[in-house]
Image 1 (tube, rainbow, N blue to C red):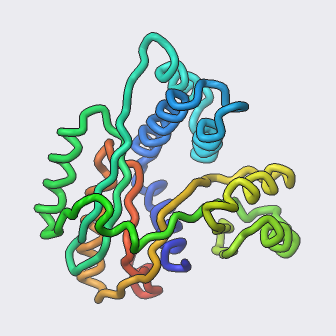
Image 2 (image 1 turned 90 degrees about the horizontal axis):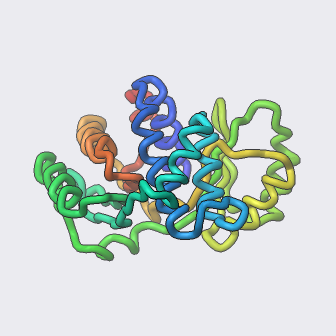
Image 3 (image 1 turned 90 degrees about the vertical axis):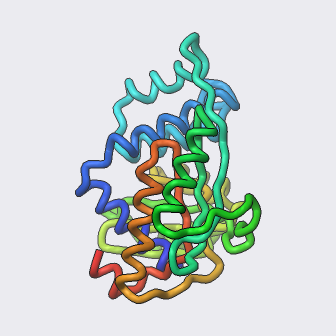
Length: 246
């Protein structure tokens, strides 16, 4: 788990440094749109929309952007997105699982295939690698002002499996089934996560030398830069040495 969370932390800092906020907003807006289309525009009765709005607030998205996205889903400007996934191997045999929201599946397939070909990866069939990843609930919370000991006890009671602390944030991980109970407990404690959701966590990780790992991460960065890609998961082990390099 620590490798996954280390990668998430690096991406968060890198995203801020690279001024990728616009791309982050694009991905969150798509999630708001598909959530509102699926369950209506009222977050009180639509859990997926409520979660998307919470993540938007965690990313400091302006309220106007959130409201416009909901209107795009339920109003006359309605946009339709298809949810799809891609599975395959990056260079050096690293497993990769990409989640997409697209309004043009042919474009997305061509774009993803192009990235795999460019970096010498292998695009597989859907379901071929899903056994390598578990769906887990994750919550990223700003550490400042928290009573960590009290919070950890409360989270364990609510079903949390893993509790990791870095210099700025706390990351809580739970089973897919306990996502709702952990989310509810955080709300009762008045704690609003910067980001939360169900993620694909690798069962096992694979260690590479620094140069090979950098090539894999360049491949993953290129995939993530595609506006149709929402999330990219992988089983590359993020060692302390690699984290320091990044």
